[in-house]
Length: 474
Ligand code: PFF
Image (cartoon, rainbow, N blue to C red):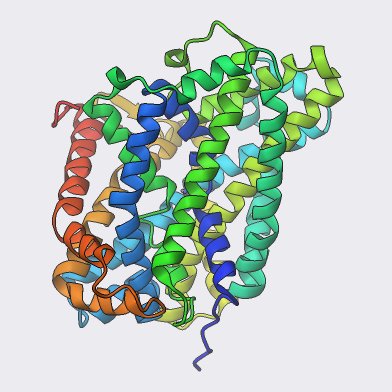
């Protein structure tokens, strides 16, 4: 039985869904802190250059592969390479990576939901006490929260591309924009807010070293949801009149705009809480920032707006991050769903049941790897330290494989599918593409320096993460 493939109903629907995938925890927390620590305006400039010069061509190529083949990553690599065994490996990476990232992301989304509910039920003071995070992640509440997150994602995905993914993005994304703007407006009226803005915006060129440049590129690549098979899959749901080049630009602008706006919220908040803080002291991990530092900032607001007001601000913040996380989770789980539907002829329902159950079990293992179950807490040992089940998923799939997937994609479009075919696909829906300088740039960059940069980042990350050795001196 062949079921006709559903498409997004409009270009706007596609752009919002892709932006919904791109806008996530990385934008709201990771980006502002990275920018403040690494040279403020100078980091922003490098980041913007990477988005335009490196990420946009990769994004267009992913969307083009999806639309051309009308398939998931595995099917797409197979179709365009005449079922080459070698390239099917790239397709499998493009399907396995999102599945494993989904497990890791689900754990964090569950915690966010827990914090949102606790703030809404009058427990902000508890959240702000140093012990709350450790207690919460090792409590049985996480299992309840997990069931709810799985149910929300399951219902959205079960409703299909138009009625599920697109509708969720059309509802959650505008709500997210409104909440973000409200929070920025509120935070900027606090005392010392401008000290935070200074760290975020004023360029400090001296901070730009190779390691900062590396982290700007990794952040940009990750933030735009590249290398995860997502844009190949979403590309397979757009109709042939849609202009990919223009859509990709809008997705990148939205994602970068949200990340920038999040900086206007996060850093002034940090500085109004403690004017003496030095951004270098902020934790590298988004996780500890969201779950231990921010609740303290929210609680401190009670002196000016009362406990209820402070709790309301916390609820708005956690809801904002929750919405961003849900649209990202939906996009990433759609990749293996599309694989099972296309390649294994599963119904959507059967594919979702299989995947959510498997992902649910792995998420459970990751959830209990913070001390609850010693076997998963000290799961493996590498780079001189014991690592939990959660750590290994994070290190392998989140941090390491993405640039490798990007590298393989560049080689694939340039040397296997071929540049002329990519150009022809990108010209569908955009008459001016062929012959334009954008076309020349995309073809040149994807076949030369972009794969070289991505390979260098991949090799350096492997050396650093797994052998505690810094290959490039970064
Ligand atoms: N662009 C997303 C972010 O910045 O958080 C990256 C992402 C992560 C997308 C996890 C999807 C996902 F499940």
